[in-house]
Amino acid sequence: MPNWIGDAVMATPALRAIRETFPEARVTIVANPLVAELFTSHPDCDQVIRFDKQSNQGSMGEFWRFCRSLRSERFDLAILFQNAFKAAIMAVLAGIPRRAGYRTDGRGLLLTAGVPAVDKKHGLHHVDYYLQMLGQLGIAGGDGRLHLALTAEEEGRAVERLGAGQWIAINPGASYGAAKRWFPERFAAVADGLAAEFGVRVVLTGGPGEMEIGRDIEKSMKIAPLNLIGQTSVRELMATLAHCRLVVTNDSGPMHIAAAFGVPIVAVFGPTDHTTTSPLAGNCRIVRSAVDCAPCMLRECPTDHCCMIGVTADAVLAAARELWELRQ
Image 1: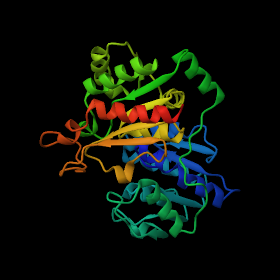
Image 2: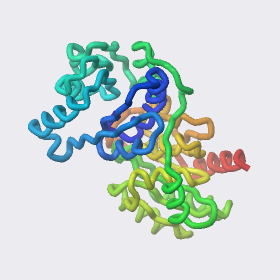
Image 3: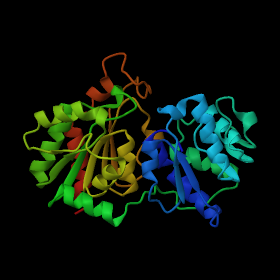
């Protein structure tokens, strides 16, 4: 699986195609610890194996031992959604006889079924990037939709955590870099506006690295939110977002999680390309400022962040109202 949560969610239509093409096969996912949580209860895979390159598994010795453990599983086919050379090396060292993926990162000779590389950065949505690879391998099927799953117990705990009322989520982070993040005070203005207008409660969501952003939003709000930033696991975040009536977010992994559960989304896009990573959902609105330098795909803005400055709180509120009225 890809290393980013959003990319992994966008690979779920391809995972469904694999399941339907090989209905009797045992499907195992290899993923980093965060991505692995997405699939611990998923109908399209039978097993999840965690590989943590940030821990000692990233050392050459531990990497070799990990590959040997994969060898004991006696896999018949490896499908590489990752583009990295190391992913192909892993499949080779695991003794997997058939290895399929894009011929990227100089790994073509390591693949037994290499697919010509395409540029996924401009024009081709990430979902189609994965499906196109499979299509060239003769693997097809599914409905093309994002798929995630929760247990009844996880859903119940989310209801207990949030309590009564209707909820909207404000998701202000983005792991890719600061350039993708809209401004805390504008998120706060949108949250206050929606809470006052529709009588909803507000939950702030995100990872541990975004706690300062959450505190800034909380300080700027007139109506106190429930701040869960850095307080949930990936599974708990999934359940929280699934329980919400609306999500206001940057281009981020949680945005795609919300899309997988059919939650209406207002997504603020700045330096990234909305044509390739927009939420795969009909009930979403993209809010962006059409400036000459966007999309630049940079993690940090080298100029004045005009792509984000041009996105006003009023524009995001208007998009949220439109989605809210559609749900009535």
